[in-house]
Image (cartoon, rainbow, N blue to C red; front, side, top):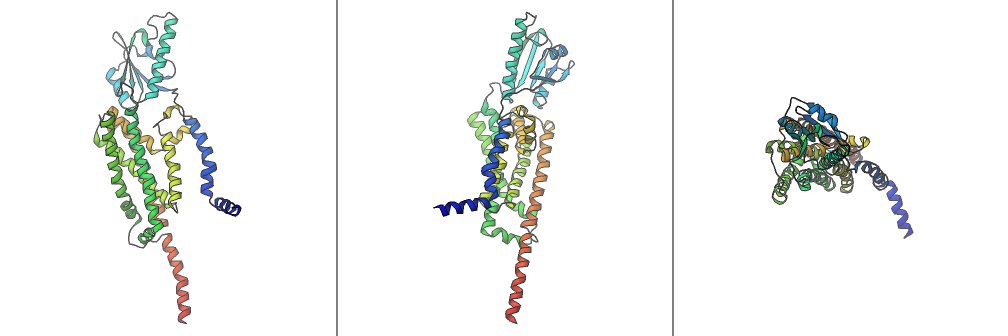
Length: 374
């Protein structure tokens, strides 16, 4: 038994990737996710419009962060800011009162805003000020848009659709390609007159179609079972999903090029998928994360797909307002697929490493055959 124990320790010592997964990764995850796991929102982007905009903006205190004060604008402009994602709270002054409009797709921000408004009302009422607790000294009417009942499933289903695409695109694709390497069929492709991008396109096309079917099923089930609305443009949603799929499939191919077996592929896919679950804004608000961790969210493709899916499905956000997340998804797709093609060409494609190994292996056989002939 002790000999087996010693053998396993020696084998584990040689497997540095597994050792890192067992020791280093838990520590890194604890530190990173410890700072990310935060539901407290300390900064709520707020716009104030209407004749009393300046007075109302002056009365607002943190967590409200006034980003725009427009006395000449009206409620239509405020609603447009919320729809485009430029603000979470909009204060509309004028008339007999003040309307506070809130973006219901930001659950924790809305809950924080409601609590802050209640505290503001209580503090000013206790001070005996006229129009107690009301921005601009008028009666306040609160209205939650896009998700009036703050239903969690309405917010989670668009994000879960992206998470499923990450699973299919990253894990399943990488396992499929590595499986062919282990069986030797991928080596056969290396000697065929195919370019690396042609092989990659042929490999990811089936997974692309399967992921598209999964996405359609998830959206339809969410709409039918949980009553999640789809208020936006289907073409805009499809564009965002296609770009996101290209990124995830590219990551799957990239993982397969650096993995020698399915175990390594699963390990790398897990290391990529877990941050996307916790740091993309699917569960924890990105704005509540510590600055040292928040930057990771900005390099995760799921972060931008969630912005697109929630914006299109719940708020009917136009494509003109989604230029930034769509553009970043396109950039990530180009980078990831480019790296995958480079790795694939170097390691697997014709003229790559397998071919060079084959040519080196062929030389001794030729010399051996010459010796036998002699």
